Image (tube, rainbow, N blue to C red; front, side):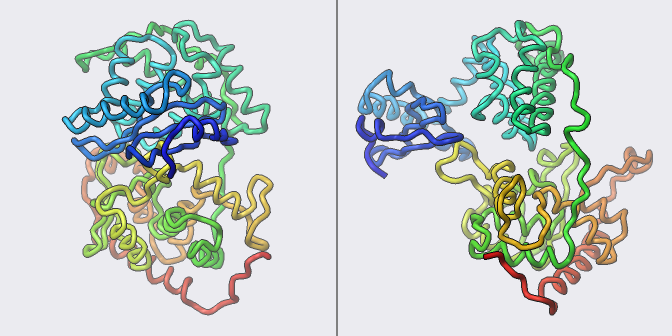
Length: 429
Protein backbone atom coordinates (compact mmCIF):
# COMPACT_ATOMS: atom_id res chain seq x y z
CA UNK A 1 0.00 0.00 0.00
CA UNK A 2 1.92 3.06 -1.25
CA UNK A 3 1.65 6.68 -0.26
CA UNK A 4 -0.82 8.49 -2.49
CA UNK A 5 1.08 10.81 -4.83
CA UNK A 6 0.30 12.35 -8.19
CA UNK A 7 2.39 9.66 -9.88
CA UNK A 8 0.57 6.87 -8.05
CA UNK A 9 -2.78 8.38 -9.07
CA UNK A 10 -1.71 8.81 -12.69
CA UNK A 11 -0.73 5.12 -12.78
CA UNK A 12 -4.16 3.94 -11.64
CA UNK A 13 -5.93 1.91 -14.33
CA UNK A 14 -9.72 1.96 -14.54
CA UNK A 15 -11.34 -1.44 -13.86
CA UNK A 16 -13.51 -3.10 -16.47
CA UNK A 17 -16.51 -2.88 -14.14
CA UNK A 18 -17.24 -1.34 -10.75
CA UNK A 19 -14.65 0.60 -8.77
CA UNK A 20 -11.00 0.19 -7.81
CA UNK A 21 -9.42 1.70 -4.69
CA UNK A 22 -5.97 2.94 -3.68
CA UNK A 23 -5.45 3.50 0.05
CA UNK A 24 -2.81 5.77 1.54
CA UNK A 25 0.07 4.35 3.60
CA UNK A 26 0.53 7.63 5.48
CA UNK A 27 -3.03 8.42 6.60
CA UNK A 28 -5.24 5.41 7.31
CA UNK A 29 -8.69 5.75 5.76
CA UNK A 30 -7.65 8.22 3.05
CA UNK A 31 -7.73 6.97 -0.51
CA UNK A 32 -8.60 7.36 -4.17
CA UNK A 33 -11.45 5.67 -6.00
CA UNK A 34 -11.28 5.09 -9.74
CA UNK A 35 -14.48 4.14 -11.53
CA UNK A 36 -14.80 2.09 -14.68
CA UNK A 37 -15.50 5.35 -16.52
CA UNK A 38 -11.99 6.55 -15.54
CA UNK A 39 -13.22 9.16 -13.05
CA UNK A 40 -10.90 9.49 -10.03
CA UNK A 41 -12.05 10.81 -6.67
CA UNK A 42 -10.41 11.39 -3.29
CA UNK A 43 -12.32 9.47 -0.60
CA UNK A 44 -12.26 8.77 3.12
CA UNK A 45 -13.57 5.81 5.09
CA UNK A 46 -14.19 5.66 8.81
CA UNK A 47 -16.36 3.99 11.44
CA UNK A 48 -19.09 5.92 13.21
CA UNK A 49 -18.63 6.16 16.96
CA UNK A 50 -22.34 5.61 17.55
CA UNK A 51 -22.59 2.09 16.13
CA UNK A 52 -19.24 1.18 14.55
CA UNK A 53 -20.71 1.13 11.04
CA UNK A 54 -18.21 1.81 8.28
CA UNK A 55 -18.86 4.91 6.16
CA UNK A 56 -17.28 6.12 2.94
CA UNK A 57 -17.41 9.65 1.61
CA UNK A 58 -16.12 11.46 -1.47
CA UNK A 59 -13.90 14.47 -0.77
CA UNK A 60 -13.50 15.91 -4.27
CA UNK A 61 -12.34 15.01 -7.74
CA UNK A 62 -8.66 14.28 -8.15
CA UNK A 63 -8.47 17.06 -10.72
CA UNK A 64 -9.66 19.59 -8.13
CA UNK A 65 -6.65 19.50 -5.80
CA UNK A 66 -3.32 17.90 -4.94
CA UNK A 67 -2.88 14.74 -2.85
CA UNK A 68 -1.42 16.76 0.06
CA UNK A 69 -4.38 19.16 0.17
CA UNK A 70 -6.82 16.25 -0.11
CA UNK A 71 -5.01 14.52 2.76
CA UNK A 72 -5.52 17.66 4.82
CA UNK A 73 -9.24 17.59 4.03
CA UNK A 74 -9.32 13.97 5.12
CA UNK A 75 -7.75 14.86 8.48
CA UNK A 76 -10.53 17.40 9.04
CA UNK A 77 -13.09 14.65 8.46
CA UNK A 78 -11.35 12.31 10.92
CA UNK A 79 -11.29 15.06 13.56
CA UNK A 80 -15.06 15.45 13.14
CA UNK A 81 -15.50 11.69 13.50
CA UNK A 82 -13.36 11.66 16.64
CA UNK A 83 -15.71 14.28 18.08
CA UNK A 84 -18.68 11.96 17.47
CA UNK A 85 -19.77 13.31 14.10
CA UNK A 86 -20.83 11.48 10.96
CA UNK A 87 -19.74 13.73 8.07
CA UNK A 88 -20.95 11.34 5.35
CA UNK A 89 -24.40 11.02 6.87
CA UNK A 90 -24.66 14.75 7.45
CA UNK A 91 -23.68 15.46 3.84
CA UNK A 92 -26.34 13.11 2.48
CA UNK A 93 -29.01 14.65 4.70
CA UNK A 94 -28.05 18.16 3.65
CA UNK A 95 -27.99 17.24 -0.02
CA UNK A 96 -31.39 15.57 0.15
CA UNK A 97 -32.76 18.52 2.09
CA UNK A 98 -31.57 21.20 -0.30
CA UNK A 99 -31.66 19.56 -3.72
CA UNK A 100 -34.53 18.25 -5.77
CA UNK A 101 -32.66 16.17 -8.32
CA UNK A 102 -33.03 12.62 -9.55
CA UNK A 103 -29.76 11.68 -7.86
CA UNK A 104 -30.92 13.16 -4.54
CA UNK A 105 -34.25 11.34 -4.82
CA UNK A 106 -32.49 8.03 -5.52
CA UNK A 107 -30.14 8.59 -2.58
CA UNK A 108 -33.09 9.39 -0.33
CA UNK A 109 -34.87 6.23 -1.46
CA UNK A 110 -31.79 4.14 -0.67
CA UNK A 111 -31.37 5.87 2.70
CA UNK A 112 -35.02 5.08 3.52
CA UNK A 113 -34.52 1.41 2.58
CA UNK A 114 -31.38 1.23 4.72
CA UNK A 115 -33.26 2.75 7.67
CA UNK A 116 -35.83 -0.04 7.31
CA UNK A 117 -33.07 -2.64 6.90
CA UNK A 118 -34.63 -3.90 3.65
CA UNK A 119 -32.69 -6.87 2.33
CA UNK A 120 -32.53 -5.81 -1.32
CA UNK A 121 -31.21 -2.30 -0.55
CA UNK A 122 -27.72 -2.87 -1.94
CA UNK A 123 -29.11 -4.27 -5.20
CA UNK A 124 -31.48 -1.32 -5.63
CA UNK A 125 -28.65 1.11 -4.87
CA UNK A 126 -26.45 -0.62 -7.45
CA UNK A 127 -29.10 -0.34 -10.19
CA UNK A 128 -30.09 3.23 -9.37
CA UNK A 129 -26.70 4.75 -8.60
CA UNK A 130 -23.64 2.50 -8.75
CA UNK A 131 -23.65 0.05 -11.65
CA UNK A 132 -21.67 0.84 -14.78
CA UNK A 133 -25.01 1.27 -16.55
CA UNK A 134 -27.05 2.88 -13.75
CA UNK A 135 -30.34 4.75 -13.87
CA UNK A 136 -28.98 8.03 -12.49
CA UNK A 137 -26.34 8.41 -15.19
CA UNK A 138 -28.61 7.10 -17.95
CA UNK A 139 -31.53 9.43 -17.18
CA UNK A 140 -29.56 12.36 -15.75
CA UNK A 141 -28.43 12.86 -12.17
CA UNK A 142 -29.22 16.58 -12.11
CA UNK A 143 -32.64 16.34 -13.72
CA UNK A 144 -35.75 17.24 -11.77
CA UNK A 145 -37.61 14.00 -10.98
CA UNK A 146 -40.84 15.54 -12.28
CA UNK A 147 -39.36 15.79 -15.80
CA UNK A 148 -38.65 12.08 -16.16
CA UNK A 149 -40.86 10.44 -18.79
CA UNK A 150 -41.79 6.84 -19.62
CA UNK A 151 -39.49 7.14 -22.63
CA UNK A 152 -36.55 7.88 -20.29
CA UNK A 153 -37.35 4.70 -18.35
CA UNK A 154 -37.65 2.68 -21.55
CA UNK A 155 -34.28 3.90 -22.89
CA UNK A 156 -32.61 2.84 -19.64
CA UNK A 157 -34.14 -0.63 -19.23
CA UNK A 158 -33.97 -1.46 -22.94
CA UNK A 159 -30.15 -1.38 -22.74
CA UNK A 160 -30.31 -4.43 -20.44
CA UNK A 161 -32.90 -6.06 -22.68
CA UNK A 162 -30.89 -5.55 -25.87
CA UNK A 163 -27.84 -6.99 -24.09
CA UNK A 164 -29.85 -10.17 -23.54
CA UNK A 165 -30.56 -9.58 -19.84
CA UNK A 166 -34.37 -9.74 -19.75
CA UNK A 167 -34.50 -10.42 -16.05
CA UNK A 168 -32.21 -7.49 -15.26
CA UNK A 169 -34.26 -5.20 -17.49
CA UNK A 170 -37.53 -6.02 -15.75
CA UNK A 171 -35.96 -5.76 -12.30
CA UNK A 172 -34.63 -2.30 -13.18
CA UNK A 173 -38.11 -1.30 -14.33
CA UNK A 174 -39.65 -2.56 -11.09
CA UNK A 175 -37.04 -0.79 -8.93
CA UNK A 176 -37.73 2.50 -10.71
CA UNK A 177 -41.47 2.03 -10.40
CA UNK A 178 -41.14 1.41 -6.65
CA UNK A 179 -38.80 4.40 -6.27
CA UNK A 180 -41.13 6.87 -7.96
CA UNK A 181 -44.09 5.42 -6.08
CA UNK A 182 -42.18 5.97 -2.83
CA UNK A 183 -41.42 9.56 -3.87
CA UNK A 184 -45.13 10.24 -4.33
CA UNK A 185 -46.34 8.55 -1.15
CA UNK A 186 -43.52 9.79 1.11
CA UNK A 187 -44.29 13.38 0.13
CA UNK A 188 -47.81 12.84 1.41
CA UNK A 189 -47.07 10.75 4.49
CA UNK A 190 -48.80 12.48 7.39
CA UNK A 191 -47.26 10.05 9.93
CA UNK A 192 -43.78 11.61 9.72
CA UNK A 193 -42.65 15.06 10.85
CA UNK A 194 -40.43 15.93 7.88
CA UNK A 195 -41.55 15.26 4.34
CA UNK A 196 -39.72 15.96 1.11
CA UNK A 197 -41.75 17.00 -1.91
CA UNK A 198 -39.92 15.68 -4.94
CA UNK A 199 -42.39 17.31 -7.31
CA UNK A 200 -43.52 13.93 -8.61
CA UNK A 201 -47.27 13.52 -9.15
CA UNK A 202 -47.32 10.68 -11.68
CA UNK A 203 -45.15 7.59 -11.86
CA UNK A 204 -43.35 7.44 -15.24
CA UNK A 205 -42.30 3.82 -14.71
CA UNK A 206 -45.90 2.73 -14.12
CA UNK A 207 -46.64 3.32 -17.80
CA UNK A 208 -43.83 0.97 -18.88
CA UNK A 209 -45.16 -2.53 -19.54
CA UNK A 210 -43.99 -5.39 -17.38
CA UNK A 211 -42.14 -8.15 -19.25
CA UNK A 212 -44.17 -11.08 -17.98
CA UNK A 213 -41.82 -13.61 -19.51
CA UNK A 214 -38.65 -12.11 -18.03
CA UNK A 215 -38.76 -13.86 -14.70
CA UNK A 216 -39.41 -17.54 -15.18
CA UNK A 217 -40.35 -19.72 -12.25
CA UNK A 218 -37.36 -21.88 -11.42
CA UNK A 219 -37.65 -25.47 -10.27
CA UNK A 220 -33.97 -26.39 -10.00
CA UNK A 221 -33.17 -28.24 -6.78
CA UNK A 222 -30.08 -30.25 -6.00
CA UNK A 223 -30.05 -33.97 -5.42
CA UNK A 224 -28.40 -35.52 -2.37
CA UNK A 225 -25.28 -36.34 -4.38
CA UNK A 226 -25.14 -32.77 -5.76
CA UNK A 227 -25.42 -31.39 -2.23
CA UNK A 228 -22.44 -33.52 -1.27
CA UNK A 229 -20.52 -32.28 -4.29
CA UNK A 230 -21.16 -28.62 -3.49
CA UNK A 231 -20.57 -29.03 0.25
CA UNK A 232 -17.14 -30.60 -0.03
CA UNK A 233 -16.22 -28.53 -3.07
CA UNK A 234 -16.83 -25.39 -1.01
CA UNK A 235 -13.70 -25.91 1.05
CA UNK A 236 -10.12 -24.72 0.75
CA UNK A 237 -10.80 -22.75 -2.42
CA UNK A 238 -11.59 -25.85 -4.51
CA UNK A 239 -14.06 -23.92 -6.66
CA UNK A 240 -12.14 -20.66 -6.55
CA UNK A 241 -14.53 -19.18 -3.98
CA UNK A 242 -13.56 -16.93 -1.09
CA UNK A 243 -14.00 -18.30 2.43
CA UNK A 244 -17.10 -16.17 2.86
CA UNK A 245 -18.75 -17.51 -0.32
CA UNK A 246 -17.90 -21.10 0.62
CA UNK A 247 -19.46 -20.84 4.08
CA UNK A 248 -22.41 -18.85 2.75
CA UNK A 249 -23.35 -21.65 0.32
CA UNK A 250 -23.00 -24.29 3.05
CA UNK A 251 -25.15 -22.16 5.38
CA UNK A 252 -27.83 -21.88 2.70
CA UNK A 253 -27.83 -25.67 2.33
CA UNK A 254 -27.87 -26.24 6.09
CA UNK A 255 -30.45 -23.66 7.12
CA UNK A 256 -32.65 -23.11 4.07
CA UNK A 257 -33.08 -19.35 4.55
CA UNK A 258 -33.15 -16.57 1.96
CA UNK A 259 -29.85 -15.46 0.42
CA UNK A 260 -30.15 -11.83 1.55
CA UNK A 261 -31.15 -12.83 5.08
CA UNK A 262 -28.19 -15.19 5.32
CA UNK A 263 -25.75 -12.61 3.96
CA UNK A 264 -26.76 -10.20 6.73
CA UNK A 265 -26.10 -12.52 9.69
CA UNK A 266 -24.26 -10.78 12.52
CA UNK A 267 -22.26 -12.62 15.16
CA UNK A 268 -24.47 -11.53 18.04
CA UNK A 269 -27.45 -13.22 16.34
CA UNK A 270 -25.81 -16.66 16.56
CA UNK A 271 -25.94 -18.57 19.87
CA UNK A 272 -23.60 -21.51 19.34
CA UNK A 273 -24.35 -23.06 22.75
CA UNK A 274 -28.10 -23.03 22.09
CA UNK A 275 -27.51 -23.90 18.41
CA UNK A 276 -29.80 -21.04 17.43
CA UNK A 277 -29.84 -18.28 14.81
CA UNK A 278 -31.97 -15.42 16.12
CA UNK A 279 -33.00 -13.28 13.16
CA UNK A 280 -34.41 -9.91 14.30
CA UNK A 281 -37.71 -8.85 12.78
CA UNK A 282 -36.17 -5.98 10.79
CA UNK A 283 -34.08 -8.49 8.83
CA UNK A 284 -36.96 -10.76 7.90
CA UNK A 285 -38.85 -10.42 4.62
CA UNK A 286 -42.05 -9.22 6.27
CA UNK A 287 -40.32 -7.19 8.96
CA UNK A 288 -43.06 -7.92 11.51
CA UNK A 289 -41.80 -10.74 13.72
CA UNK A 290 -38.38 -12.14 14.69
CA UNK A 291 -37.50 -15.54 13.29
CA UNK A 292 -35.48 -18.15 15.19
CA UNK A 293 -33.82 -20.98 13.26
CA UNK A 294 -32.36 -24.02 15.05
CA UNK A 295 -28.90 -24.74 13.67
CA UNK A 296 -27.90 -28.19 12.35
CA UNK A 297 -24.72 -29.58 13.92
CA UNK A 298 -22.98 -29.69 10.54
CA UNK A 299 -22.88 -25.88 10.17
CA UNK A 300 -21.75 -25.08 13.74
CA UNK A 301 -17.97 -25.31 13.02
CA UNK A 302 -18.28 -22.90 10.07
CA UNK A 303 -20.26 -20.34 12.06
CA UNK A 304 -17.86 -20.67 14.99
CA UNK A 305 -14.95 -19.96 12.66
CA UNK A 306 -16.66 -16.80 11.40
CA UNK A 307 -17.61 -15.67 14.92
CA UNK A 308 -14.03 -16.17 16.09
CA UNK A 309 -12.88 -14.04 13.15
CA UNK A 310 -15.50 -11.27 13.10
CA UNK A 311 -16.99 -11.26 16.59
CA UNK A 312 -20.46 -9.73 16.86
CA UNK A 313 -20.25 -7.95 13.50
CA UNK A 314 -21.28 -9.12 10.05
CA UNK A 315 -20.16 -12.70 9.43
CA UNK A 316 -20.07 -12.20 5.65
CA UNK A 317 -18.33 -8.82 5.29
CA UNK A 318 -17.40 -7.38 1.92
CA UNK A 319 -13.81 -7.21 0.79
CA UNK A 320 -11.81 -4.40 2.34
CA UNK A 321 -11.70 -2.54 -0.99
CA UNK A 322 -15.48 -2.64 -1.42
CA UNK A 323 -17.83 0.24 -0.77
CA UNK A 324 -20.39 -2.19 0.70
CA UNK A 325 -20.53 -3.64 4.21
CA UNK A 326 -21.40 -7.21 3.27
CA UNK A 327 -20.87 -9.61 0.40
CA UNK A 328 -23.15 -8.75 -2.48
CA UNK A 329 -25.73 -11.28 -3.63
CA UNK A 330 -24.90 -10.42 -7.24
CA UNK A 331 -21.20 -11.12 -6.69
CA UNK A 332 -21.97 -14.48 -5.08
CA UNK A 333 -24.27 -15.39 -7.97
CA UNK A 334 -21.55 -14.51 -10.48
CA UNK A 335 -19.06 -16.67 -8.58
CA UNK A 336 -21.45 -19.63 -8.65
CA UNK A 337 -22.08 -19.17 -12.38
CA UNK A 338 -18.34 -19.13 -13.05
CA UNK A 339 -17.89 -22.36 -11.11
CA UNK A 340 -20.95 -24.28 -12.27
CA UNK A 341 -21.21 -23.28 -15.89
CA UNK A 342 -24.01 -20.72 -16.09
CA UNK A 343 -24.02 -17.98 -18.75
CA UNK A 344 -21.55 -19.81 -20.99
CA UNK A 345 -18.84 -20.37 -18.37
CA UNK A 346 -16.96 -23.68 -18.43
CA UNK A 347 -17.92 -25.63 -15.29
CA UNK A 348 -15.46 -27.11 -12.82
CA UNK A 349 -17.88 -29.98 -12.25
CA UNK A 350 -18.54 -32.47 -15.03
CA UNK A 351 -22.15 -33.30 -15.75
CA UNK A 352 -23.76 -31.11 -13.11
CA UNK A 353 -26.59 -28.80 -14.15
CA UNK A 354 -25.93 -25.12 -13.27
CA UNK A 355 -27.73 -23.66 -10.28
CA UNK A 356 -28.03 -20.33 -8.48
CA UNK A 357 -27.66 -19.55 -4.75
CA UNK A 358 -31.43 -19.03 -4.56
CA UNK A 359 -31.95 -22.62 -5.73
CA UNK A 360 -30.42 -23.83 -2.46
CA UNK A 361 -33.46 -22.58 -0.54
CA UNK A 362 -35.69 -24.66 -2.84
CA UNK A 363 -33.26 -27.55 -2.40
CA UNK A 364 -33.67 -27.39 1.36
CA UNK A 365 -37.46 -27.39 1.04
CA UNK A 366 -37.38 -30.40 -1.28
CA UNK A 367 -34.75 -32.51 0.46
CA UNK A 368 -36.13 -31.73 3.95
CA UNK A 369 -39.20 -33.70 2.86
CA UNK A 370 -36.85 -36.61 2.13
CA UNK A 371 -35.63 -36.21 5.71
CA UNK A 372 -39.18 -36.77 6.96
CA UNK A 373 -40.13 -33.17 7.82
CA UNK A 374 -43.78 -32.30 7.23
CA UNK A 375 -44.81 -29.36 5.01
CA UNK A 376 -46.16 -27.22 7.86
CA UNK A 377 -42.87 -27.35 9.79
CA UNK A 378 -40.81 -26.79 6.67
CA UNK A 379 -42.85 -23.65 6.03
CA UNK A 380 -42.28 -22.51 9.62
CA UNK A 381 -38.51 -22.96 9.38
CA UNK A 382 -38.37 -21.09 6.07
CA UNK A 383 -40.80 -18.42 7.28
CA UNK A 384 -43.20 -18.97 4.43
CA UNK A 385 -46.48 -17.14 4.82
CA UNK A 386 -49.41 -18.96 6.39
CA UNK A 387 -52.40 -17.57 4.53
CA UNK A 388 -55.31 -19.03 6.48
CA UNK A 389 -57.13 -16.62 8.80
CA UNK A 390 -56.14 -18.43 11.98
CA UNK A 391 -52.43 -18.41 11.18
CA UNK A 392 -52.38 -14.83 9.87
CA UNK A 393 -54.28 -13.17 12.69
CA UNK A 394 -54.31 -15.43 15.74
CA UNK A 395 -51.53 -18.00 15.85
CA UNK A 396 -48.49 -16.48 17.60
CA UNK A 397 -46.95 -19.70 18.92
CA UNK A 398 -43.25 -19.97 18.12
CA UNK A 399 -43.28 -23.77 17.54
CA UNK A 400 -39.67 -24.01 18.70
CA UNK A 401 -39.91 -27.65 19.92
CA UNK A 402 -41.31 -28.68 16.55
CA UNK A 403 -38.66 -26.72 14.65
CA UNK A 404 -35.86 -28.21 16.76
CA UNK A 405 -37.12 -31.74 16.22
CA UNK A 406 -37.35 -31.08 12.48
CA UNK A 407 -33.85 -29.66 12.30
CA UNK A 408 -32.51 -32.67 14.18
CA UNK A 409 -34.05 -34.86 11.47
CA UNK A 410 -32.52 -32.66 8.78
CA UNK A 411 -29.14 -32.67 10.49
CA UNK A 412 -29.16 -36.48 10.67
CA UNK A 413 -30.18 -36.77 7.01
CA UNK A 414 -27.53 -34.28 5.91
CA UNK A 415 -24.87 -36.04 7.97
CA UNK A 416 -25.74 -39.32 6.24
CA UNK A 417 -25.51 -37.65 2.82
CA UNK A 418 -22.19 -35.98 3.54
CA UNK A 419 -20.49 -38.84 5.36
CA UNK A 420 -22.12 -41.86 3.77
CA UNK A 421 -20.49 -44.08 1.16
CA UNK A 422 -20.73 -43.33 -2.52
CA UNK A 423 -18.76 -42.51 -5.64
CA UNK A 424 -16.13 -39.82 -5.07
CA UNK A 425 -16.77 -36.40 -6.57
CA UNK A 426 -14.96 -35.87 -9.86
CA UNK A 427 -13.67 -32.37 -10.59
CA UNK A 428 -13.22 -31.41 -14.23
CA UNK A 429 -9.69 -30.94 -15.41
